[in-house]
Every structure is written in structure tokens, then in C-alpha cells.
Length: 284
Image 1 (tube, rainbow, N blue to C red):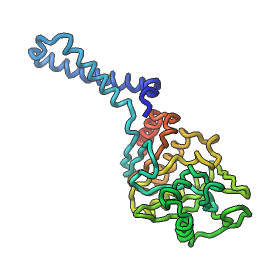
Image 2 (image 1 turned 180 degrees about the vertical axis):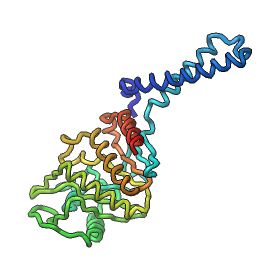
Image 3 (image 1 turned 180 degrees about the horizontal axis):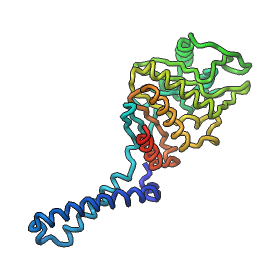
Image 4 (image 1 turned 30 degrees about the horizontal axis):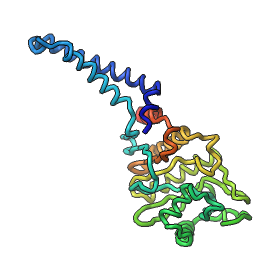
């Protein structure tokens, strides 16, 4: 968490002033009632005691304005969205894994080792590509191949938005195809494709997760080519909106946990994201 950066954020100081002044007004009103009905209780109270009132108001304002943890519960639907900084694969929830429409898994020539998909192969399957390939093929058995592409790696192309759900070691891994690989294995996507893919993802989570929480990385930052169109702050809002729209149709799960890598946290305005989450509560 970037405490010093938050102190330089105007949004923090506006919140501090608003909540601090509100608390100061409430405490002053209570003190006025004591002065009116129980004046003897205030006899002998001097500057140190009076100073406690603005100090308490300031502490309350700081508490209300500093957005940690960044989370919001919604009554309709009954769900929660949280932002955490850490390791996606350390979360005690089901996970979302972004993939291409050919569901390639080979590293490092096709899939980057440090990508979420590359870490999925390494850390969940202990780099056993044969085992992961087998599980993906089983998950895709009922999905229709729409065409083939002449390239290294997998050649069968599935519709964008296809979700291959793998259950491995008591967790569900929702492998969603939201990028397309060309004959040179270069990934690309669009905002429209990304939105439709997320919509299909939430449908699958709704059906297969039994309401359990799901964790997702910030979608669109890796090899998809979307980072210039969808910077990280917008990508987080995009993911939140897609989940909330899907949840208002029918509850998806109890919690969406968006996991931000520690090296990316400095690029995220947590105060703005908390305000954004709160604004969705008012419109729900």
C-alpha cells in the first residue's frame, strides 16, 4: 500500500475534510447538549480536554477517507467486490485464467513464462504440460471448433469467450479465451470481444462455482495488446462493471476478488476505485 502517495491525493484530503467536519459538527452538538442539560460535568474542563474533540473528528475523518481494505458489499445482488494486492495463486478461491482462442499452453515460445497462464502451468501443474493439456481437452470436449489456423502450437480455434473450466485440487479454474492468436502467435483483442468474453465468463462462474468466491487478475494487461487502450485503472473499472451488470441479471457468486500484482499497485488510485465501488452501491 502506498500511504505517502495517498496523502498526496486530493481525493483523500476532500474526504478527510468532509468526514472530519461532519464528525466535528456532531461532536460539537453533543457537547452543546451536555452544556445545556448537565453543565456541571463541564466545569473545570480546559484546553487539553476541548482539544480531544477535533482530534477525534480528525481520526474519524482519516479512517473514513483512507480506503484500506478496498471493498464494497452490495445488498442487491448479495455480493462483494474486493481489491487486494498480492499473488493470484495464493488466493483461497476459484481462479480466472485468461487464455487465447487456441488454448495454447507452451512456454516460453508461445506463452510468456511470467504471464498468468504461464504461472498457471508452472505453479498449479508443476510445469506438467501434458496433464494440463489433457484437462483442457476434457473441458473443451463439448465446445465447437470454428476454424483452424496455420501456426506453431495449437491450430484449432474456438469462439472468443469460450470458457474451459478445470477442477483441480478442489478449485475451479475458469480458463476464458478473450484474445486471438494469429499465424505468428501474436495476440490481439478488442473492447467488444473483452466485454462479451467477460459476460460468458460470469455465466460459467454462476453455473459451476456453486456461489463460491472467485479471484481474477486485472484482465487485458498482458499479451492481449489491450494495455494501450485499457490502462490498469480503466481495466479494473471494466472488470467491476462487467461483474456487476452480470450480477444484476442473476447473482454470480458471493465475492469477486481482483488481485493486483505488487509491482502494479503504484499505478492504481485506490481512493478512486473505492469511490467507484461506492457509487455502484447507490445505483444498485
